[in-house]
Length: 225
Ligand SMILES: C[S@@+](CC[C@H](N)C(=O)[O-])C[C@H]1O[C@@H](n2cnc3c(N)ncnc32)[C@H](O)[C@@H]1O
Image (cartoon, rainbow, N blue to C red; front, side):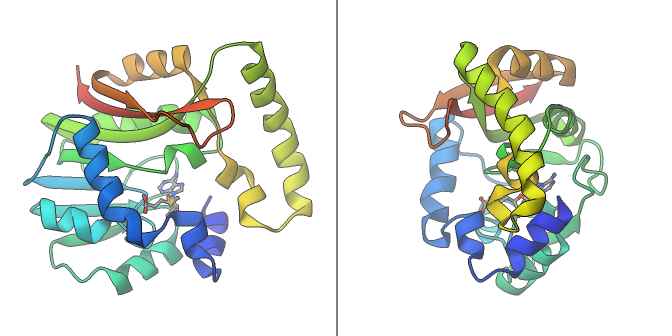
């Protein structure tokens, strides 16, 4: 994961991989408003901050922002672009949020990140980590693709799970690598993962038009059970 995202940070198309800085504010406002909770104040943990497209905006809303990423190169870009004094940038391994303390977060924000994790266990582990770092009464605002029902979608996931790692060594482009293409949980897998993590869905919304093949774009406000 680190190699892939460091390569994305070093490319001259970083916005292509991360998202358009010009739309960061409406995207962030929409994440909170569509989940009916315009949270402000306290400590926010931003998971997968990238070059800080949303980090400065979170620093306007919250007293303290701990922004983590798997990529040192992304964190370097964030260090240059985010000047707010209430932001701490921290590196994580990619399978856990080990540099974030238990129960510290009034809010967790994870946007355009879970879609890239290259395996079921990693997504499940991150949901467990959200529960671990949430303070009592805290909320996680999470965006992720969820695989649609039916055999066709399952077959597509299976084929993609085989083809992407097989062809990745022959293609250097970041967007073809497993760590960019990611894994999609099904709805029952998501329900089981949330329950195992000790999280409940307090609010849910979906994009009317999904940018993902065979998957819906889902937004969740999660609380500890
Ligand atoms: C598409 S970018 C989104 C960045 C930011 N959330 C935004 O919307 O502007 C995905 C980011 O997640 C980071 N990332 C990927 N896998 C990660 C992991 N396992 N843990 C933490 N960050 C990760 C990447 O390095 C990258 O910076």
